[in-house]
Image 1 (cartoon, one colour):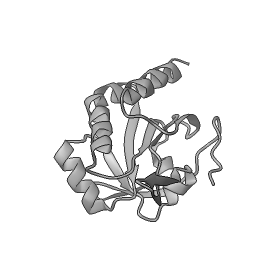
Image 2 (image 1 turned 120 degrees about the horizontal axis):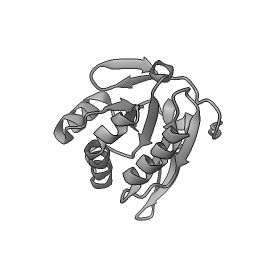
Image 3 (image 1 turned 90 degrees about the vertical axis):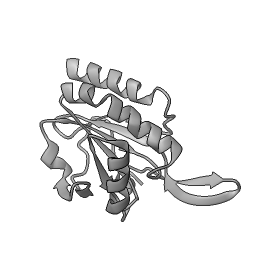
Image 4 (image 1 turned 180 degrees about the horizontal axis):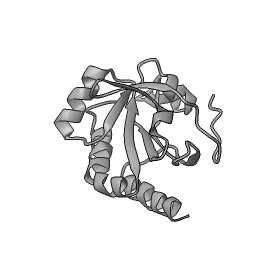
Length: 158
């Protein structure tokens, strides 16, 4: 269960990301973070969502924001997905589900009557001080990135 609360600092965790990186979320202080969790590399909805973040990447950068995608896929899968889709941002391999559990995005899913545990598409905006400012749960891909950008613009203005 998540202990995340809006207006409170997020947990500082060590993550493994594409381009052979290991870093702590606190290493990104001074920048806003958009952390988006998605179920699986190279699937239709996840590809579309990543492409939307890619296509608006310059706008996020102009708002002093780092975009990071997170799934349970391993680094090899992430590297392939990132290269194939020309993502200008990194993907975090959360193979042990520590980050997913901290953000409480592992949920029971039911696909064609088969139940399994998986990532519920979710996005979080974290401010320059490491404080959770906005969360989006049960995300629908269409229009989501633009909604995140609008909320981020409002956050940056305040």
